[in-house]
Every structure is written in C-alpha cells, then in structure tokens.
Length: 54
Image 1 (cartoon, rainbow, N blue to C red):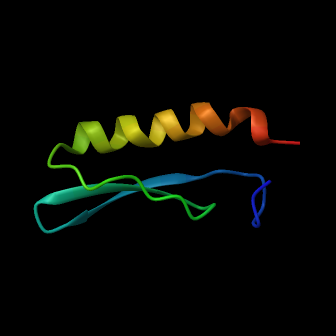
Image 2 (cartoon, rainbow, N blue to C red):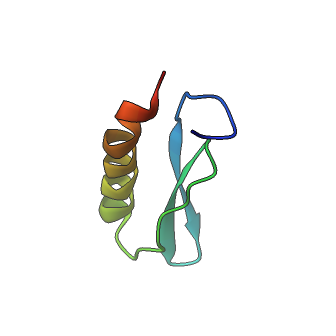
C-alpha cells in the first residue's frame, strides 16, 4: 500500500540531457537519454501498480 492516495499520476521531467519519469506516489524511474523511454517507464509503472488500487 502506498502512503499517499491510491491515484497514480505520472509525469516526465528533463534534467540536462536526461529525462526522468516520476509518479505522485513518490516513484522515480531511472534517468534516460530517450524521452520516449522515460514515457515507457512511466507507462510500465502505471501498469504494474494498477492492481494496488483499492
């Protein structure tokens, strides 16, 4: 169970030449040079946490 609300909202942010996926639950994906890969990381996180919602 997550400490925050069960609603997951992901965003991608840029830090220099790297893109990172982040979620409102506190999860942060690895830094990627590919923005597309960062978006895929966010989608994967949402898919794996879909069963956590109660």
